[in-house]
Image 1: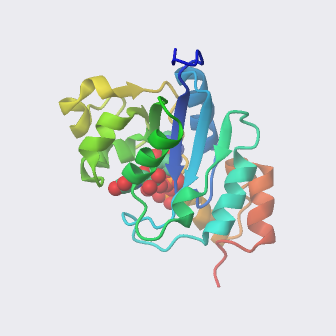
Image 2: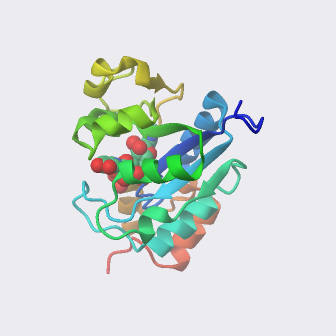
Length: 205
Ligand SMILES: Nc1ncnc2c1ncn2[C@@H]1O[C@H](COP(=O)(O)OP(=O)(O)OP(=O)(O)O)[C@@H](O)[C@H]1O
Ligand SMILES: O=C(O)c1ccc[n+]([C@@H]2O[C@H](COP(=O)([O-])O)[C@@H](O)[C@H]2O)c1
């Protein structure tokens, strides 16, 4: 309890390109809220993804799709801060800001196994490990369930493995399916599929 008597806020952070958001992201959000008992879950679309080779779809579309995709998770709120920041989006900057904004909050960084594997290459990795509990969901074709990631072997107490059935779904596959005129409703949900169609996203120019 804080001095004011209010319980410490448990704040989850689910960042991503969300280009587009898909049903594995939604499943991850739901699992994280339930298993981490989150008071709030910040959905944070990336501004400039320094680590991705492609140019992302303009932020206004990814923010709008994220609003639609996570609408049914009451604890989720889309947080535009990284899309408003200039320069590369570094998670450590976001964690520092949230730490200052939600005093005393306990922060949970939610990532898939691919990013957990890459964590040692993230900007300010050491400070990230000190700022948040790293909560990892397995992904098919990652190096296997219960992999001990490089960062985890050094700081095992900072990691938590989320229980989620591995879902073979990626935004890359969805962009590719849209570009060949396939219906992606079953992969992204109705509202996001309608948004993609209405705004002609991911079609071959
Ligand atoms: N199928 C999945 N299972 C578990 N975690 C996932 C899955 N897809 C994405 N994530 C995680 O969600 C976060 C945001 O992912 P992102 O928006 O980059 O989606 P993506 O499907 O990996 O996109 P892309 O194919 O464009 O790289 C990352 O931490 C990623 O590891
Ligand atoms: O801060 C970094 O150096 C860093 C490096 C790689 C990824 N991230 C963040 O990890 C989250 C998931 O990344 P991605 O590539 O799976 O969309 C997203 O919020 C990225 O900004 C952050």
